[in-house]
Amino acid sequence: MEERAAGLILFRENCGRREYLLIKNRRGGHWGFPKGHVEPGEDDFQAALREAAEEVHIRRIQLIPGFRTVVRYAFPRQSALVRKEVVLFLARTDEEGQPFREEVEDMAWLPFPEALQRITFAEQREALRQAEDWLSAG
Image (tube, rainbow, N blue to C red):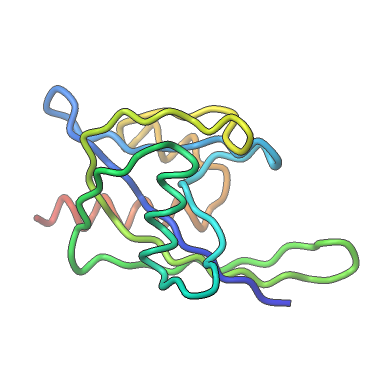
């Protein structure tokens, strides 16, 4: 079984420092980025925008051109192994956001070192490293 999802590595500038938005998923309890399934008729970016609006109520999003990374992983669901591919885009916002409590247990804006430590899965930590390197390179 294969699934496709899309999401955003969202950041903001706060008092001269860059902060990244992480969410804690209510079902799995893991920390990562706002993301979700690509629905029929959507492209990856449309799905990422919709998920940010649904999960954290953020709609003012400025895409950072040229950055796109793909995270792949597998997990068991019932008796099947699910292979999941998640396309992540990098984007800036000036909104604080608020969690959609049915899906998001908590959310936090964190500077890069703290965000890197908080993310649960190695694949998403690597995506954050790529985003930070991209932004730092200018």
